[in-house]
Image (cartoon, rainbow, N blue to C red):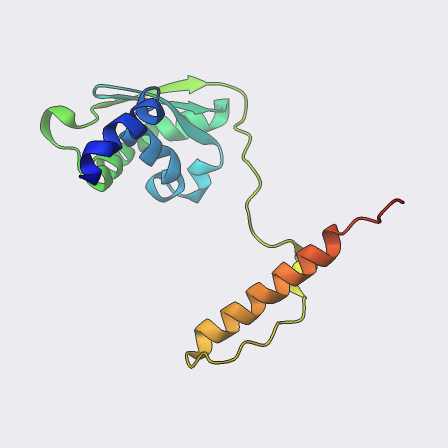
Length: 148
């Protein structure tokens, strides 16, 4: 029953980007490694061909790493036979601008933990206490003065 409802909902989302391309975007750092992920990104996916945008100096490194990248991507995404990627095209462009990570800001790292009761797992308890401290520090840092 739910399966019948999903195609109309997901069709607009996947109309422009295939699920495989979205997966490549999400797992890019894992697939190519952190060093290459900083200077490259997938920009187009056609049958058998992946186009990668990268800055000039990184293009040479990407060219030499292409066989390894193809093997990693095909294996990780389960692409075999006719579906497998066979070629990588490189598009030399300006350096890739990465979005800032969603890690806690430095000012929140030193926030006092919020005590949590009823959790027996020490690791989980510590993580929840730190999370509570980060949330409290963020809320206190974003309060604006009220104008009357």
